[in-house]
Image 1 (tube, rainbow, N blue to C red):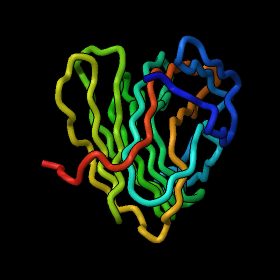
Image 2: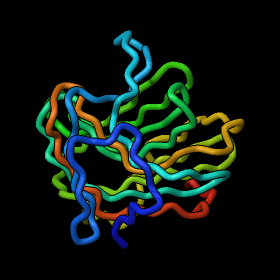
Image 3: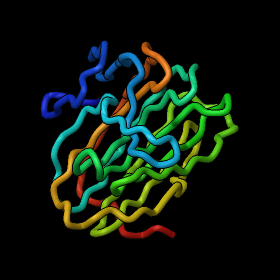
Amino acid sequence: MGIDTTAMTWFNPPAFAEERNGALLVRSGEKTDFWQGTYYGFHRDDGHFLHQERSGDFTAEVTFSARYEALYDQAGLMVRADAAHWMKCGIEYTDGARHFSVVVTNGNSDWSAFRLDHDFDRITVRATRNGDALFVQYRTDGMNEWRMARLAWFDPAFRNVSVGPVFCSPQRAGFEAVFHDYALTDPVSRDIH
């Protein structure tokens, strides 16, 4: 499958991005993030986001690996209407371990995360939009089934959104990730059970 960036655009281009053998290798700039207000008080909209436009319902999937070393190093998938309305999901490094993380922002950000204790190299994250909902799933190397991470409200007034791979390093520069596969299709299903 691979990742084809020809129809995609960078929002906040990273310090380094190179396509190699169908994959996209990236390295973050200094102290980049997406966050709006809650708990920490700051407003950041300078993370790296490679996106394409999509209208209506869809399923987006991205497979990636990364070298998580510093607090809040993160990579995954983003669905974005504007600076105050978006969702990012994937792996975030916190408390010395990889966590599956979902941040939903509707004016202010919220954050849910759970630790992934099993060993894996690559993870695939999936977000399916159906009307007013984003259904977030994941699976790692060796897993046959998709696991549910979150069912989140996403304002249906935003019919046109930007979708694609995202990565940030709020504490440093030089976080490295590889996006191996990316797909944006019609919704795979409305079934969540």
